[in-house]
Image 1: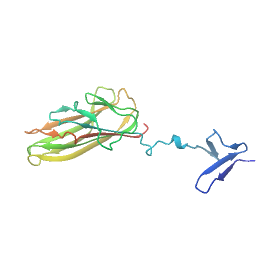
Image 2: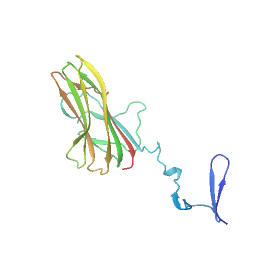
Image 3: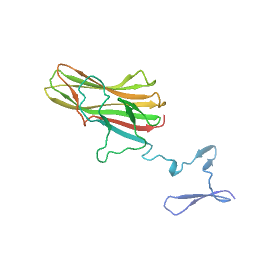
Image 4: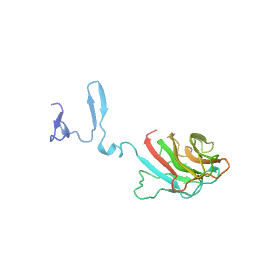
Length: 196
């Protein structure tokens, strides 16, 4: 007698039976001319496929040109969550916890003290843990003295080698006045979107 597909309880749940009863440990179903594999509920990642989310911040204003290397902390504000393993950083160089396609985003407030001023933030990545390339950038111009502007930039990175594929952020100030990346309002966001 061939196997059967039985509507179990009218609630959309199905039971697949064979001559020996339950399908048991065999989870492969063959349809004429094609073969497909069923995924168990436990095999489907939580969050619709997103398996990693982490957020960091700067705890003090960044006031000088160069890599953002200090005053970095994982965001611990109320209800700010972590999914999967956390990012790690050393002197502003961020290491990913798992391979995959990652969305990397900077969002921050740039403050200028003169209309001739500007501030630039770059996201830079490396594939050899040495030479960094700009993959996304933002620039904020001062339109008046003591002008504040919230800006963001982002990139999707293919992280295939955890030892060599890394990312960092750089701030550049220009003009005649100091420009700050406003501490506690600058966030570095990392979201793992899919497998690489």
